[in-house]
Image 1: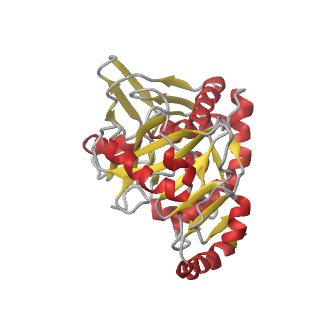
Image 2: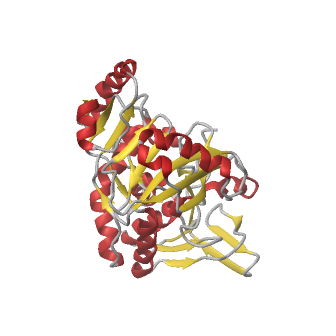
Image 3: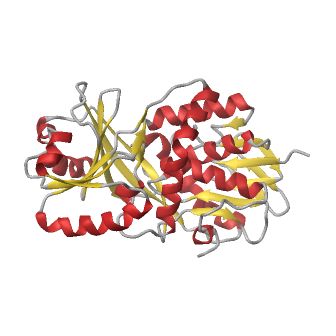
Length: 370
C-alpha cells in the first residue's frame, strides 16, 4: 500500500522533499500558506559554498553541507530533466578575500583541515588574486581559492523544482493562508481555515521554514525556529566583471548569467517583517565598494529581503520525532536552504523508507534536542 505524505511548506526544502519522496514512490501533497518559493528560497543568492561559509571546524553541520554539495551535480540535472526547465548552475569556484598579511595564518589553519575534506584549496597572493579577479580592490592582500564551490540561480531552481514535482504527480496546494495541524499522532490531519479545506495523510513533514516555530502548541513540543531578516541587493553588470563567488568578512558578491551582481547579506531581527530598509542596504554599500571599487559609484537596481529560519545552535531540525514516526522535521536551515536541499530530501526519504543516510551524524540535528 502506497503511503501518503503531507509536506508543510512549499519552499526549496519542502519541494525538494516532495520531489525525492515522489521519485521513491510515495504519494505526496504539499501545503503552502503563500506561494511556492515566496520567502527565503526565492530571495536567496543560491551559493553552494560549504568551505567558504563554514570556517571553524569539521562539525556535523559542515559535514551535512559537504555531503549536499557532492549530491548537487546529479540532483540539479535530475530536476532539469524532470521539469523540462533550465536554470543556472555555475561551477565558478569561490574566493575568500583577506586584506592583511596577519590574516594568512588563520587562512592556513582553515586550509589545513578543509583540505582533508576535499577542498583542494589554494592560498593566493595579491598578484594571483588579481589574475582571477582583475577588478578586485588593490587593498586586497590575497585570498583562499576553492575551485569546487558553485552556485545556482535560486528563483529558477525553485521554479523548476515546483514544476518537477507537478510533473511527477505531487499535489501542490498553495495560497492556503493559515495552515493548522489538528492531529499528528498515528497519522496527520491539517486544516486550512481560510479555504475551508482539511487534509489527511499517513506521515507529516514539517518544512515550513521560519514559520515552523508557530506549530509548537499544535505539536506539543518545543520548536525553536525563528525568523532572521536577510536583505540583499543586486547591480546591473551586463559585462559580468566578477568571475567567481567572492567572500570577505563582511559578506559576499556573486555574479549571475543574467547580468546581475548579487551582494548580501545584511541581517537583523524584525519578526516576520520582510520590508527592505535603507539602513540594511546601506550596510551592504558600505563595504562592497571597498571590495570592488567599481560598485562605489553604482546604485542597485533591485533590493529585497527574505526570512531565514534560524535555530539556537545554528543546526537545522532534521529527522523524525521520538514520539511518533508519523512526524518528521526538515526546518531551520537558516541561510543554507538552497545548499542543503538535496541532502535534506535524501535524509527524509531514507527515513520514510526505514533506513538512515549513511555517513551523516543525524543525532546532531534531532528535532527534540532542545
